[in-house]
Image 1 (cartoon, rainbow, N blue to C red):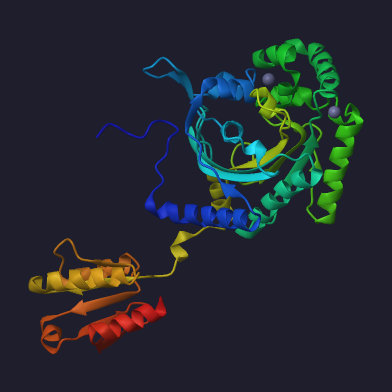
Image 2: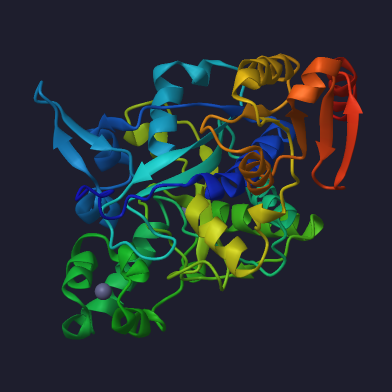
Length: 420
Ligand SMILES: [Zn+2]
Ligand SMILES: [Zn+2]
């Protein structure tokens, strides 16, 4: 067959899904403990939503977004990130009228037309949490602490938390002006994109992926000299609380994040083993996002984590090995074709009791069935032979211990359900 998965879209195969479950379960368990509720928003939205929120000048909207017209002529986009859709839903369903803050989480695929490489796909998965309706620095810190604990729970102990304040609409323009001036003096040496960024959105100059631009911008002005008093106070409070909670951080005065809607806190978690940029996820505060969608002023703060990147880093660091999952379940084996139906009925009985069970569907010999059960990591095999049929018993084989005992099916059922 010549049809393959599209470039940048990846099949997640059964041997990989175990690792995915591990991550999803850990994430959902954390969300439960921290009192976040799940929201599921559409995979496609009005393109306008992302243009207004993520920003027209952002790489995401300008170069990476999948935009298409449907048969009704609507301009739609596959969601390139999660926060815009969640905020849209929050506003659309009047969640700003509920007691605040509202704490939500999401898990699902996002889409960006980017150059595929390790840990970076065009369809990729993100999980994230959001807190709407509070400006408190303690909310920023909750998001960061959640993320730090999530990573610790997965076994990461060498991640670096970079944090910065990107200011507000009052103080940021002064910083942008200074950045623009700095870039204008070096305009000829910057890439074409950056030349335009210097004009329209100087903050973007700091997340150009081209090495030469990064070198040139290394000594550019730092935002901490430009923050207004409320922004500085907010940032200092966040840092002080992180210290109280013993979350180590590094103030990175050039961290701006790739999306336009951030205000105040911006942060990112880095690993040496996470692929090209080393980022496993990040987030920050977005107090102006709701207003940019013509909603009431609703402050918000959140984080988005890259599932593939985290899995890649776990693999590199030896934290994920699905092969170690314990053998489980019961395989019903029989060498006699006339006993096949009986074996199948037993499998259904086991399933009704909530046990994983399966039987042979390939007319294998008994020996081949035993081999199959071993390869598929079944813990037990129930062997049903003609002799056993006459005595109304079965052989229950423990594949791990290599022990076998003759029992009635009911006795076996009791043993197996007691173990489960
Ligand atoms: Zn400010
Ligand atoms: Zn550049």
